[in-house]
Each structure stands twice: as C-alpha cells, then as structure tokens.
Length: 243
Length: 118
Image: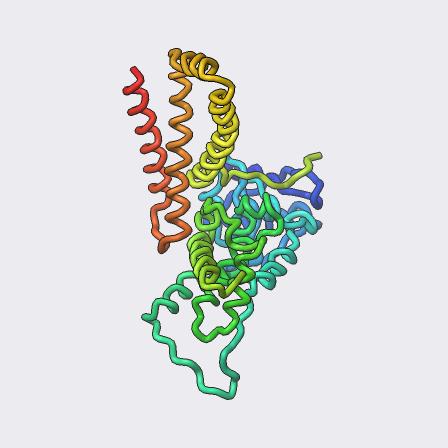
C-alpha cells in the first residue's frame, strides 16, 4: 500500500522583539485549520519557546490577534484556507504596538488610549435607584448597538495608518467605545468625552481609510463611529460646549 | 536580520488610495499656487512682461499641461466633497462606490477639458 505524502504549509513566524527575523517552519495541513492551530502546532511540536497569546479560541476574548500575510486577523477564527497565499503564511505580531516577544504585542498603549478617550461609563444613577428603561427602538440605543460588540482585539488599531503616522491618535477602537457612550442616555460624561474626542489625539485625525471596518472581525464600522464623533464635536463646538 | 515584523497589505484598498490621492493632489496644488501668484505678480512689473508670458502659455505644450492642473483640481474638489459628506452628514454605506464615482467624475471633467482643447 502506498502512502500519500502529508501536505505541508510553509509558515514564517516572527521571532524576537522590535528587532528580529522571520523563522521558517513546515506545518502539516489539516482540514478546517485555523491560523491559531498553526501557531499552536509550532509551539507544541517544533519550538516550545515561541511566545504568543490566546485564551478562549472561539472569538470571544479578543486576545489572539496577529498579523497574517500583511493583514491583522483574529487567528482563532481565521481559517488557513481563507488567508493562505501561494501555499505560504507569514505570521507576525500586531502592528502599531510594541512587541514583547515573537507574536505577543504589548497592548498597554491600546488600553491607555481607551482611558484618554474617556471610554469609561459615567452613570447618572446609583445602584440604589431603579434601572432606566431604554427603548430598543430609540435612535440612541440603535446607534450604540451598532458599535457595542467590540472585543478589544486590537485588529482595527493595527490596521490603522493614522495610528502608524500619529502615535498620539487614540485609534478606532477607543473612539468607537467613546461613540457608544455618547449615545448612552444613562451616561453623564459626554462633555468631557467630546472634549477628549476633539483633542489632538481625537477623532479629527481619522482619514476614513476604513481599514478598521474592512478588517474588524466583529463586522463593526469604527469609521462610522468616528464620523459620528466628528459631527457631535462640531455641534458641541458651535454651541460653545467645548473649546 | 529584519528590522520590522510588520507589512502593510491593507494599503492596496480603494479608500486608502482615495485618501492618499486626495492628499497628494492637495500638495501638488499647493505647490502650484506660488507659481500662479508669481505670474500674477508680473502685472506689477509691466503689461508687456505679463502679455509675453501669457502668449507663451498659449503654446500647445502648456495647454496640454493645463490638463494635469484641471485633473488635480477636479480630483481635489470631488475628493473634498466626499470627505465633507462623510464628516458632516449621517453615515452612508457604499463609501468605496462614492470614491469610485468621484474618481470617474474627475476623469470625466479632464476628458471634457481635453475635448475642448482639441
């Protein structure tokens, strides 16, 4: 009986920190294989020192994003068959963030900017008061709904050339979060939030490339949220609410 | 030893190109503007000098070069309107199509100018 040679994929994986090099591995091809499966195979069978980050493996936690063939992806839900080019995969850490080691990027600047964008809910009621009733049909609720499913994976941040060109820029995810809160009728922090959105790191940096929308694994459109912030900050400025 | 782990494949996307073309057209127009003012300044130095220059601009090569200027103006104007719509009107889907329409319209304006020139 003849044996069929196992199909293999040429995988290049980033090794090192900000400076390093791509290391080649040959990984067996499997049905329904994800990019995270590839990285895990390398760590378990080829090089246990490979550093990468993951948790849930089912597209909920947002911790496994990496750069795959030049585009940021959530690797646990990215099938190899969808992204492989000429039988090759090149896997690196997320762009626009410091590299800790290998495929693990330091997310600290990403989350610091959520704070700078005033992405924290400021409640209008205490826990001792009754819950506010909000109609699912209200315009504000629907605007918040459209942007609320972010899993903080950092794909949009890594895909954004405005972040690359302007390190001060808050980025799509933080501003998308700010937009959900601007539309949250329970929140009382909007003046401070709109002032932050209009600041030098804020929404007016955005060039509407829409790379964030095209690559967001949750199908969100941060560019639309940022455009909403541009309108709201302009209205607030005309009314004299922010300077 | 490579110095960066990052590549930028997403830059092939249409809206990235639209923003870049808009920006480059603005820079080129800004570079043209001082030359335009220099020519206007010739009027201060005398009618003959300005007329001499204007006569030179009627040469076929300069007329053809004007096509580039018209194209730049059309691209920057329509690209600017696209940005104003994004930033001041409720969000609309189909931004890629909007960018394509702006590009086709700019080329159309260039073609009309070319036909008028010939």
